Length: 241
Image (cartoon, rainbow, N blue to C red; front, side):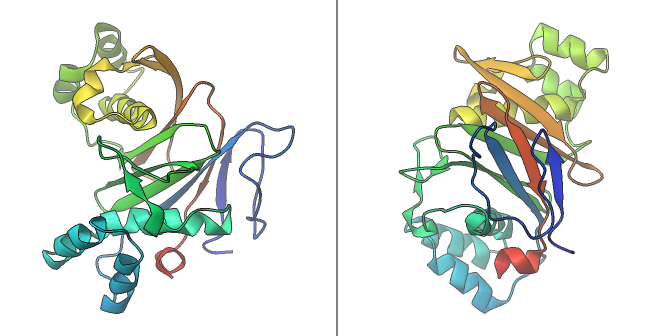
């Protein structure tokens, strides 16, 4: 059914309309769920007003001002994606969102989640309580080797030169780890990426790349062991309601 398909990576399988399941099943590994959407070029004014009203201040006024300047639809899309997880798990309302000093949005009592958007696409990942998660989405050819080399270590530059990682793959893996750690881009040089593992500030992370659509690269990172990942691509009509 359109808008109900799943890309499933890992041991757990889920399809069709059977989407209301626990984030962690008894006796199984934890599951990170990801929703992706292509951001509409425009939305009805009443739809925008409804989503703006659901946000806490001062983010409500900040985003409203950006939208008035013709920007901000991608930021609105990631928040709508977060709200779309109510079909999968219980989430607090968007009005309870808080932002850390590093700019990472969070719910005071969980669960963990991560937001990303780039070039007209947006994604949101939700993880079980206590499992730190970070994601990054980019066009697969966006990053350039010369630019990424400035934030890469010797082993990472060698991996790019040998074709083991593309520049965008390295960048997105690092950024996903930073988001899982709750850190900012200014610390990207501190992330050391190897084959599906990374280290930042003395903590180990697992990471994987997925291609939810042709030409797009999605990186998912979690603290510790990498869990199963389920990716869904709902329609904009479903996301924005």
